[in-house]
Image 1: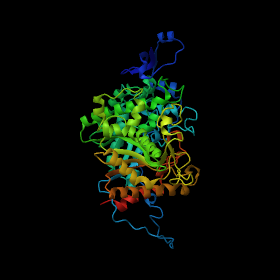
Image 2: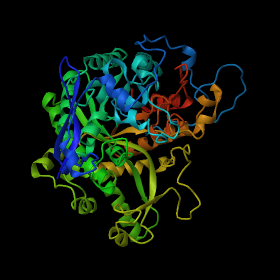
Image 3: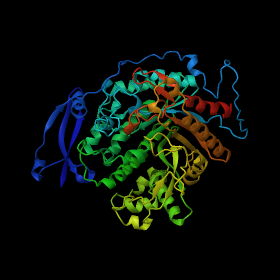
Image 4: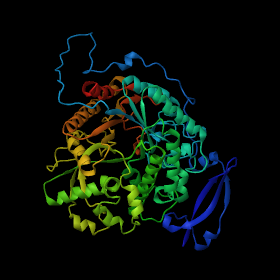
Length: 576
């Protein structure tokens, strides 16, 4: 039986035309219908972009600053490092034990370090200059989907304050800035007509980076899928997204390949694919079973990424193009064979889901494949060939680690029971050692319960990445950081800016990278998450990851102690 979905075409110089069309249900999209005869009724509706915003999103907030701002000089007082990096000459009397430098450690001269941010989390200006809505504009309107019911309408107003932001990180001594493009800003409906105002905006963001001696790194997709593509055919659940994403990537590579060397196609597909199924009654329905949806998403991500990779290389073969993985080091909780098997399943269903196809075989790891092969189409030989080798570095957003153990019922029993809470991955995780008493490290904010400071395991993790996937361009930690516990409760500026857990996290993590470098792991760079406190997705603004504090009322930015600790490690250890 055919199913129906709303499609759109933006006609040059004309209003948006919506037309009801049909395509096979194998795409995964099914419109609600009360009877088989309902499919006979179709309609054409004239909708402008403003109409589409009003129909699906409703009113949006606007910032008081709505033009691009020239950066103000960075006060020298804001660039004075905190104790214990710096003590003023008065008052005197402090006695601080010095920590000597390890002379056998060093970051190579070409090791890059920077900060990262993502379009929906920081830009704001969601309706400005022709931007179309994304799924996150819709998700933030789903009651309680964001625990604080915050939106990205204004966020950090980076869309107008980006010059100030680039100037600030340059003043701090940071030479790399990783940001993502807003797909629905460039293509308001995900495909079709291009928004030239968006291209001009990103032209200037990139040029501003270069003006300040900051290397721009660009991510094409950081979770803010154009809403129209989700409603039209199910977004990442349909293979129709592949040509749309490739067209978007082609435009970006063509326009900026001479100015941007480092590119990331997609950010953390493990996370955004696991967001499927999206909340019911807010998006077009799908007939794909909920448990299978993330794997349909992942399948289409691999196809879209690999096609985009080869398009980028055809435009400029010298570009560094990768995708960003995420997960964490998997530590067997006991030395049992069952926990060892669980660890391997954890690798297969986490990093291996995308890393094995891209770096090893062009196909899924065995335990994952045995499940998804029951419903996903097999990759063709041509697809495997395109997927395999489609990343130049192993880019990992590596925040933490986990203890892994077998399910209480055993792995085999779990894999045979689709109603098991751990099916189909059939491994369990915890942050506690086997005595159920000690955690593997200090906890982050309660709003990010997945994250503990686990820097002791970083050298082993880096070895595992290199030894397992053997990336030709080395390993990069493309996001790392920690949410300072209960930072949201601090109300005075002085207490906000001292962030001891985050500061120690960065120092200890970078020391762990230095250990791995001394042991022969080819680590090529790091990106701290994040440039400043921003919208942390479903946690809103209540969870803080920034190395800068932002007063969201005044939009003033302030460096935290962790910003100086991060930069200081390179001032001490990087080869000059």
